[in-house]
Amino acid sequence: MKNSVIIKSFPSGIVLHLDPEIDFNELLIDIADKFRESNSFFKDARMALSIKGRRLTQQEEEQILSAISENSQLNIICLVSEDEETNQNFVKALQQVDFSDETGLCSGGQFYRGTLKNGQVLETESSIVVLGDIYPGATIISTGDIIILGGLYGKAYAGEDRNEGRYVVALEMSPERLKIGDFKYRSKGKGSKWPIRPKVQPKIAYIKDKEVVMEPLTKELLSELPT
Image 1 (tube, rainbow, N blue to C red):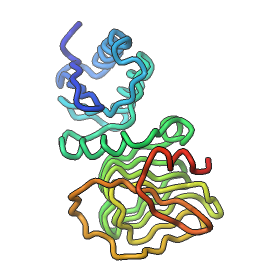
Image 2 (image 1 turned 90 degrees about the vertical axis):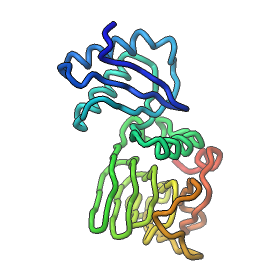
Image 3 (image 1 turned 180 degrees about the vertical axis):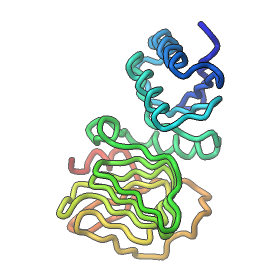
Image 4 (image 1 turned 30 degrees about the vertical axis):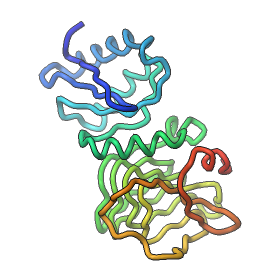
């Protein structure tokens, strides 16, 4: 096997080191071969993935994810950055819940890697996982669920009108405005000042008794939400 693809591990994830010079189509073949040979080792593990060694377009990243899924049982939860502290925060949040296919995130949702800044708007007609922060003045809108592996300091709108079964998750919750279906979140206290994040405490906002509530995120709580 060529050394164009090297797999290394970090807690709850793997790093894919790619040859920066090889033709991308040839690289895809090597990735498929590497994961096919490693299938018995990884089995059906759920991991985050970091890619290093070369710049990739979003389309190329998607092709790599497809090559992995088609040649192994490994479940890639998300792509994470090269920053170790950020990776640890992402993985810590992912370990607390089971974002399986019934949420629609793995099978039909979207991933967005980047930070939304003042004035920027991200809108989608499916559930979405954001690998980054939503800064004050920025807005994210989804007809499905919203999962932010970072801080929510701006505005978030989840679910269509009268849809009470959606939720918003973030590593740090301090939204300017948050709405799920027809219901607005009303803060009962002063939110934390961004962007300081001394301790990761993922929270989830969802509808309970006709109002938006915000609670620490647990696997048990997520399993009790309506689907």
